[in-house]
Length: 459
Ligand code: BES
Ligand code: ZN
Image 1 (cartoon, helix red, strand yellow):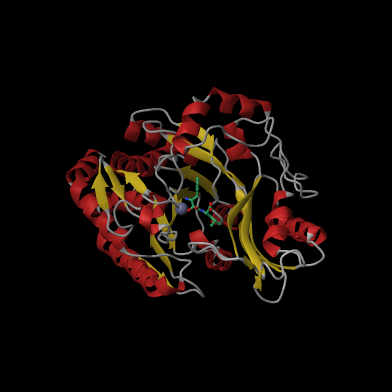
Image 2: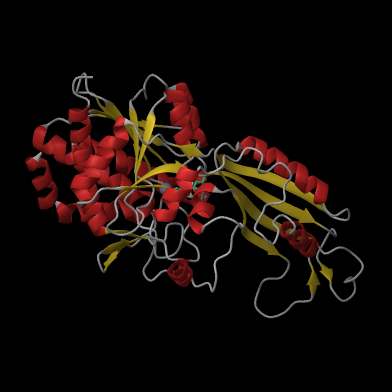
């Protein structure tokens, strides 16, 4: 093990340079203009894994962006780890709010800034580099390893889902290892055991058949922007409760034990509000902030547009109004059922004098991972060595759509070992990844494989 850790130490700077190469590629999965660049990034991953010493690497075509699959099965009798991560990233807008270009990785104060640095290229790269250390130093790994690195996580993982369903034998594994979450705070290593799900819609409301002069026609017809605003406003009450009938039916209640555990975590509401630039926090009455974001469902408006939004004033009554909205879901809510309830309710509350079209976008099931698995025990040991502290257990508010598919179809246990930080700005301008976490993450990954192998002895 010492030779692995010293290799990681010695190659620290090169690792950062290589991560920068990974970050320069504009692999925005949701953008058709970035299709070739996303593919180039997939090829980069493929080549990189081969150069690390993994011979069996496959470039898998899908109807969308490619999947990179790799495996090293040279440890018979040892557990098989499936490493999952994603090379695709979110769009960069509003680009004017970035201090340096989103695809020009720059180091400031010990953080590397670029789109995808924490979500998820930097995090998945921690494992690449520990695997490299083993392959270059020992020519082998302590466990068997399969890797699935996809390019569509940020758009719902639909093609990967199909791939997993069709390749159960190929992907068979004991543990799925994922680093795509955050630590509770700097210096507080964390294992995540819960993720929220998602149901996402675009709403297009149409009133008159064209934009109208608001002087000549204002007052004569329903304004769709007004109609949409009223409709959306009615979906949540003053106490933050969502007013879609049946929405809370399957929500699993927080246990007393879990509430106590959340309450024990150091959390300063005032500081949190200040960091976000809000005077006060707002959310569902009767729940703490951590409960609200980790274990309660939400309805949020992600974007709205209608009529004239340019500079100056234009007296117009728009023909159309649009919104993108999403609901975060918790166990045991089902995204399909929620989508059905949402569509039904929207139909019922649509004003009579306009029409509404609903387009359902990606969804994800909420996930819970067992906390007493061998994988989680090994991860806890590894974090203790890599970060020098016993890890904390927490849930997260975000979603990783494929987790439940892995659980259901491969019967494998997830280990959510996140190296991000809560203020890394994923999906926002100035996304960054802490280089200490990168470095300690690589060591943790190396310890994880080693610990898992020794813990499984005698199985
Ligand atoms: N890395 C995130 C998931 C995440 C976010 C975990 C926040 C913990 C906290 C992931 O890449 C992501 O953003 N997922 C999307 C999925 C969606 C597009 C289906 C999300 O949560 O919005
Ligand atoms: Zn991610």
